[in-house]
Amino acid sequence: MLLNLFISIYALVISALYFFLPLYLKGSLGFSGARIGLLYAVLSITSLLVSFPVGITGDRYPARLLTQAGLGCTAASLWGLAAVRDFWPFLAVFWLFGLSLQLFRQSLDILLFKANPGGDARRFGGYNAWRMSGMLVGILLGGLILQTLPFPALFRLFGLGLGALFCLTFFLPRTRGQRVELRQYGRDFRSGPVLFFALWLFLFTLHWGAEGTSLGLFLQSGLGLTPWGMGLYLAGEFGTVALCSYVYGRFLEGRLPPLVFLILGLAASGLGHVCMTLPPLYWSFAWRLVHGVGDGLIAMLTYTTIARLFHVDRIGGNSGLISLTTTLGVLTGSLIFGPLGAAWGYGWPLIISGALSLALIPLVYLGLRE
Image: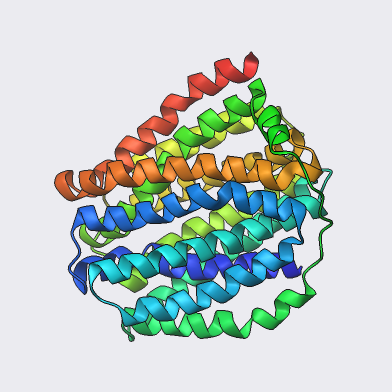
């Protein structure tokens, strides 16, 4: 339960900032679309550089130490973001913020995998349900706060809240450390099933880069939503993902072959991304919920696949390599879709990335049959 609590708090902070931040960067700080894309790319680059080292460290030492470092640095960097307004200082603090978030999130995942060596889907479902519930609360809380307070106040408020939670990290479980040779991770990752898993996951996560750089701006300019309206809109999706994760982990896992769930997830995610760009608002919202079903299925399949592909003693480093793969997808998507959205309109990144998810269906069908 403590792991679930921490992942929900992490998700709350992320969702309250991630989707609204482009509005602040463009409106209050005057950053261009390319600079906004660069900032989000920095998050991905930071994750890219540290995912594997953090995973190895989580295998060799108690992952709780990483949680403490990530939580403390995240709180400090939020106060730093509230204090700077010029692009280059903001970029430097944003880099520290991204590094801290990576430490925080990845250490929690390592603790989960090591506490669930059998890959029990019910535990993964509960963990993901708490994570998405945190995002639901965060998006509503962020939209509500931003109705009355400026963005720097939101940074400081969350920084104080995270600092106050630091004492709870001492109650997280202490995982057993074991030294593993680096070449063993390479042997694990070079196997055919792992490489195929990494390939389709990379292509799928391109749409996360499109969401980070364009979704908030599309909801504002394309659908005319206020921050509070955006919060309600996205809260519906997060609630759908949470429900889907719980239902899959509790009732559906093992009832059908994973390939069936994967195809259903890609179809729902891709169609939802494309069709949510069409008015009126109720139509867009309905398709965003469909997208949430797809993302919920993909999230559960990702966790259960990692648990079953890798030995528990090496799961930190190997899950770090999978995190590196998804980070490459987000980075690539941010660099492509940030400038594209500014030039063509913020709906096009969502349409193109959704179409790519649909195009993955024949690839995963043929690949998983093989």
